[in-house]
Image 1: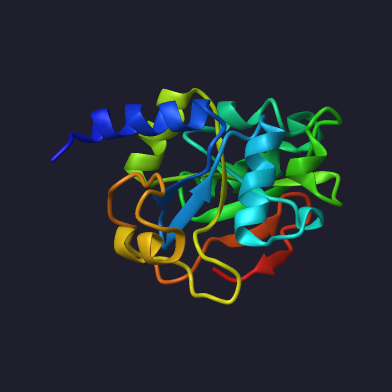
Image 2: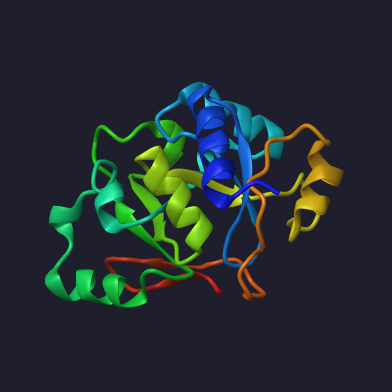
Length: 188
């Protein structure tokens, strides 16, 4: 059995090759890749059969990892407090994106959905990689999200790169809220 650290370093190498990976999150396995690689994001969208216009979620170890992508200056101190009170944890916040944030992340929006995870393996992975990861549920269109490594392999094949581990105890994917208005987009 590989230690977590060795497994994470192996997955980091896969990410550096601009490949898509699967990893456990708070509720389900996620598909992820380097957010700065248009090639990797396109591979992920193709795999998921997900339209580019929908935009994607970034998952990070801490708020600082998200700052290159979001317009922190537009948030009031109250909005920031509300966000920080929910993190690390399973709430995704939609925050205005920086103008230089790539369209392959924001889709048709001028904002970006972001989350600071409380899953220890994902925190380690983001820290080792030095940046956030794209995060979308690991499932093919029309199939339920994978909740185990076994289910990932059934849907994506035996050779698909998976960070071994267990999902957190949550039943539902993350709640999604607007950082500026507090509006609920998706129930958690």
